[in-house]
Length: 339
Image (cartoon, rainbow, N blue to C red; front, side):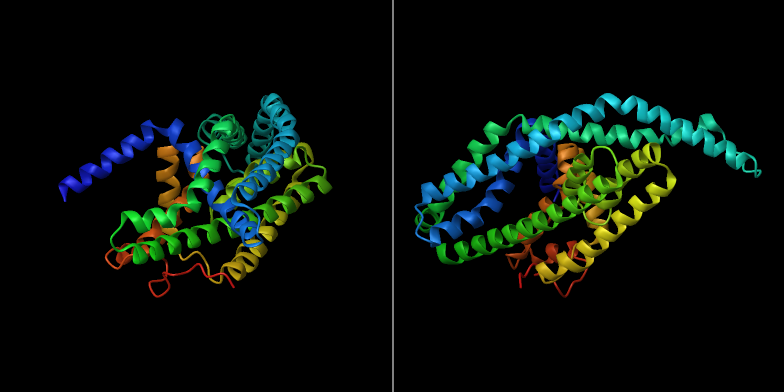
């Protein structure tokens, strides 16, 4: 037992040390899993494997280039104007304290700004987007890794048959694992894209600055259930209060709540068949753990990584009890069933 715990600690320490290399590699794996579906679809329609991979990769590159082109200016402008927004938020906070003071509610301005700085949320959002952009600077390495993974996936069944004595059972477990992960990531990406698009359009109609930026943040943080939508809404609501006033900020709050209630409680469960069946405590702990190990990108990947671990544990009889412990409902561990 002690040796096992020591091995786990060593592995986690190694992952944290190798963060710069591990994060792009994990992103490449997730992109490859999502791209495997379209590649397989093209192969079923008699498109050669090499051409199918190149077509899918070209589409991904085109979409990524378009996103970077649209958002690059917004990220730079927002970063440049961040001190102005932070100062105005502090002024609004002081004005609120003065207003409450008229009604006998005494709050120390210095203590409030020290422990509750509203500008820190916007600063953290800018930091997260900057670090995500830093990961994308390794886009060439990520794309190369995706291409090699997709080409390697075609020959994996024959390799497993040659390498393993009980290849059929191992291959069936592996295919079940890959299918579950692919379905989860594909559906989650589709729902997250819809969430980000609606948020961007809604903020644009309201006249909020940088709507594409907040749409991207909503898209990314939608991978984190329960609290991701709250984190994504905070900087947009604060910016709206600074730019347009409290009434429009309330409208933005209603917009985020409506989008996430509809997408999270109606659309996503219908596509997946059931909810994620992850314990809320597990979701929170995974957010903290993967964020500590892999940084802000790890927070975005926390639930997909935990879902991969859970699906992998659910494939074996000896480890299924661990998958049950990670679940919110012990009677429904096999939760990702696409209708």
